[in-house]
Amino acid sequence: MEIKKIKETCLYVQDLARSKDFYHHKLGFPVIGEVAGRHVFFRAGASVLLCFNPVASKVSKSLPPHFGSGQLHLAFEVEKEQYAPWKQKVRDLGIAIEQEFDWGGGYLSFYFRDPDEHLLEVVMEGMWER
Image (tube, rainbow, N blue to C red; front, side, top):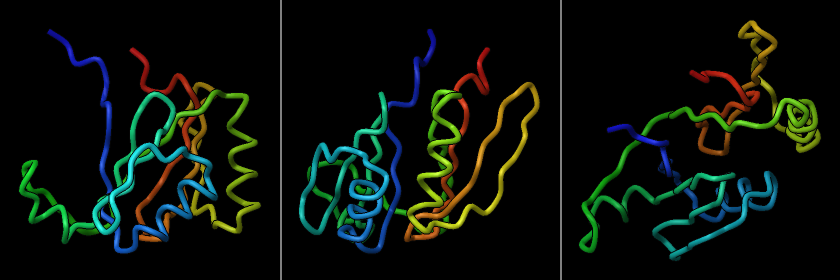
């Protein structure tokens, strides 16, 4: 048995409207689900990014409760040819790039923060392949 991939990942955010503005209007992720005061979900390639209000998800009755806090990290994979345009897009949005890292073998990534200070990374496709 083998896990195919991580289908979705979750961030806990303080302001859903602010997160929607960042991920949808700035980064361009399509919104695929939204419940006012509880969550907003985005399509991120073949994966799903869930942004939850931690107060609301902590007291969930329909699904197991969950919540968290602190600065989390996730990485978005892009085709090598799209790496430079994504880096430029982030810069053009006025978002500071904290660091760019050369992983060797021709693979680069760069790091930046969302409005909740979660550390986001854009990585070139092919990193961590078997």
